Amino acid sequence: MAADNPRGAMFRVIVPNQPSRVTNAELFFDLVFVFAVTQVSHTLLNHFTPLGAVEVTLLFLAAWWVWVYTAWVTNWLNPDLTPVRIVIFLMMLGGLVLSTTIPTAFDGRGLWFAIAYAAMQVGRTAFWLFATPRHRTAVRHNAIRILVWLCGSAVFWILGGLAHGEERLWFWIVALGIEYVSPAVRFWVPKLGFSSVEAWAVEGGHMAERCAGFIIIALGEAVVVNGATFAELTWSADNILAFVTCLVGSIAMWWIYFHKGAEAGSEVISKAAESGRVARLAYTYLHMPIVAGIILTAVSDELVLKHPTGHPDVRTIVSTIGGPLVFLVGTILFKHSIRGFLQLSHGVGIILLLALWWFAADLSPLWLSVATSVIMIVVAVWESVSLGAKVEEAEER
Image (cartoon, rainbow, N blue to C red; front, side, top):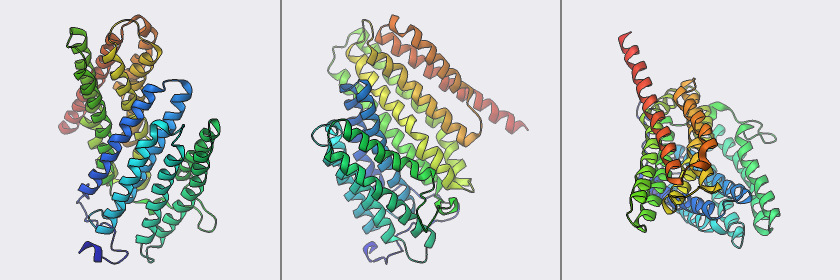
């Protein structure tokens, strides 16, 4: 039985030239974050103010961070083993508590949010340390380093949960800052020093597939929002066009990320000599704006579907243009990290979206959404054609 495996046998068995697959337990765990993404987008929709944007951004960064840390750990540990599965299921419980408290994290349930988050981060890392055999010194030292940093940030999460108003926000900014800075300084701690890049080797195909799965989660949430909102509307010409436009926009985002980028990223990280460095930059950090752009677009879709005509308000303009803009910024940086050059199609798309901002107030929400979707289609088609031409040239040579 898997439960009879001795400590140290909980790590994945890496077979050369055979990528580790994403397990059903990991996919089951991801379902919690479908709910988390929905909560983030709805919270932003209901608190679309400068302060609300800061608070929701912090909550999104926290949700992403706990998910991506779990993806790193399950890249090393084997989720098909019973002890690892139990930890994943406990993480699901914590994730549900975390997701449930997102709308009221800065009100009545802040302490619950903080407890759930800190327990997930510290508990998962402590189990990873326990599961690592003593002879794997570099891995054990990494686990200790991360545990020290996460325990330090947990103090500020809990203090923030106990505080109120702006004090809570500042405590949580400090806590999140500690966690986001720690990988950049390679988790330095006294005596153990810095973590080495070599110690962070990952199974590249698995990491790429996990992060691509989260993109699917975010896009799926956007599609669900579109369908649920449209189902409550009368089927007028404006509403139907708005629904189709929002769906086409989501498809364009899928195409831009998956048609070439996801496969290229998987290939690069799988062959990289320093896979940990690629995973840290391309997947841990640069996937954040990609997901954030999709979530912001989901907010736009709901606003456009409910009010397709008239003059757009600030929320509609910011979300309708800002969502694709943030997505393209994240995507161009992600593809630059794996290809080594900036994608011209994405750069032009970013410029067109910025230019559209000057005319946004004169367009209805519907036609503003149509314009952004057209720009995203142009980017998707341009990249597909240009990269296809490069492949043909390479084959001819």
